[in-house]
Amino acid sequence: MTVNDVKLVELPKYLDQRGNLSFVQNNAQIPFEIKRTYWIYDVPGGEARGGHAYKETEEFVIAISGAFDVTVDDGKEKKTFSLNRSYYGLYIPKGLWREIENFSTNSFALEFASTSFNEDDYVRDYNDYLTLKTNGEI
Ligand code: TYD
Picture 1 (cartoon, helix red, strand yellow):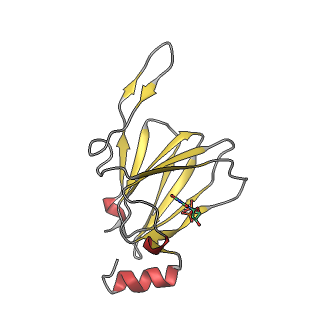
Picture 2 (spheres, rainbow, N blue to C red; picture 1 turned 90 degrees about the vertical axis):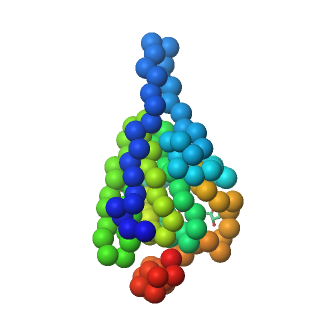
C-alpha cells in the first residue's frame, strides 16, 4: 500500500432546514465491513494521536465536528489530509504509518475499523515500520 491508496470520500448529504444528515454503510461509502467504532475527543491543544501503523486494520476517519490533519506515510512519501467537514471521510488502507494532529477545540474524530481491537496489529516504532515495509512484510 502507498499513500496513493488513501482516499478522501465525499459522503451522502441530506440538506434540510431541520438540520443536515449524512451516513456511512458497510461496503458502500466504507469499503470494508465495520467491526469496531471508536472516537477521539477532548484532545488538549498541541497533542497528536496515532503515531503507528496497522498490519491488517483498515480505517475510515470522519471529523464529525471541528478539524484535524491526518498525515499518512508509506516510508517513501507522506500526504496530509485536512478533515474539517462531517460529510467527508478518509479511507486509510492497512500498512501505512499515520499521525493525527492540529486538533481544533472541541474536535471529534470518529473512526471505523475493519478489525476487532488487537494490540498485536500495531507497529508503534517508526524504524520497525520502515524495516517491515522495506522487507515487504507490511
Ligand atoms: P491508540 O490506538 O494507541 O490511540 P491513537 O491511535 O488514537 O493515538 O489507543 C490508545 C489506547 O486505547 C490503546 O493502548 C488501547 C486502547 N484502545 C482499545 O482498547 N480499543 C480500541 O479500539 C482502540 C482504538 C484503542
